[in-house]
Image 1 (spheres, rainbow, N blue to C red):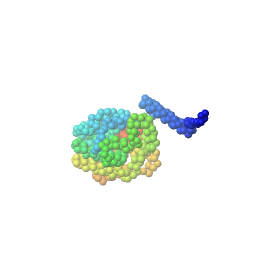
Image 2: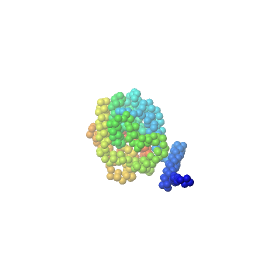
Image 3: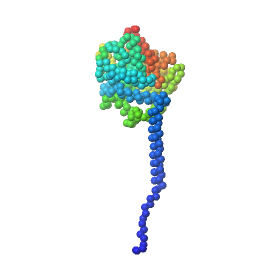
Image 4: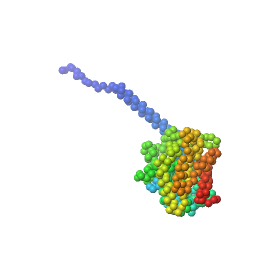
Length: 398
């Protein structure tokens, strides 16, 4: 009707209280995330410009580790048979705990591989295969036990050792390259972590991969982006160092001139307490028999040198910090290996006793943090191996 008004519905734009709270909550989360990102970027910048000497010790150690990993890729290349190998004609300074160490490699006539050049010359009367203890990580060439042994006996020796190698890889190294050296003596260095390295190599060899190093990185990474963060983020390294330390049995021992970080990792505890039950033990035995066969085919004699971990060399100290080691046989692992070698008529030298005796006198034979020999440890080992090989008639008396 004319004059009547028609009711009009007006939309209610009042925001419910719950929606307001949700928006406010999201805004707060966004601000917190933004503040976190800004803080992390600020911390990254601080770590990037801070003088290296002022960084916390744990950060310096982890930084050295990741810098070393980056340069390791410059020095090595993948290999479908060996897992990885050294490149020939490398000449660089490699970061270690004791500082940057010059590392040079020579192919000794091989164009596809390098071996650490320790200053000895062909023709070689002995070749040595093994892992980082045979490569002589963390010391200059002149301090390497292989070089010391060569100098003391006037027997030219070449090291075919590669850091990170397993006994299985060493057997393949000897089989592929050993005969070309025409050496009448083959020395094999073994170390307790060979058990776990053997398992890794065995699993890798069943996978379709031509680079063991990259394969291990993928297997161990919690996320595909983790390797990138390890290389580029100081904050990530700092957090990783803190978490890594908390999840491992680590003790710092400072007394009577010794300054040692002792690590009681799970793999080491198992290898010491029950080595015969480790899955890497049958693989070690198989590799050693394989190397004996290769040496015989070369017309060479074979000797095995057993190197102990820092914790085994200073076992009395280790017992102070780990009660479960009180009843453990310090030499159970060594006895297992030497017993097998004796059964197979393979000559062996266990340097544990000499290292332990010198360590008990307060001599620091390993680096503080690293598990590798320092120059002193290399010297003691060289003398021990010389006495043992001389007694077995494998080296002439000097």
